[in-house]
Length: 117
Image (cartoon, rainbow, N blue to C red; front, side, top):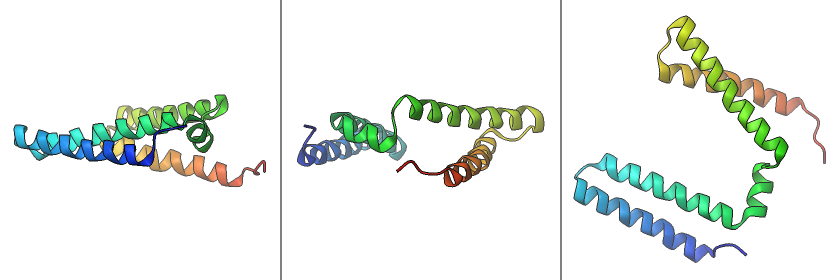
């Protein structure tokens, strides 16, 4: 049994209040945004781990799913680094191009695979 939805809502409200306090004490909206992003991500991870079976099934986190995710991220990084090294592309643009280019191939491959239902 995972966390109740009320508890998760309270955790997100706490993340928002901590971000407001960071903004008040640091006087920068960027610090507040990073605080909110970090605490909200942590809340999501905790919530996902509390419902581990549902989360792992939905994300395909079995031995094959982890290998697929690792190879997807590795192929994006390799292609981006090739674009940076060979063509002297800017870093952010290279990773954006790589995500779109490699993602299109992976998405097309997933669409033409027969489903095992």
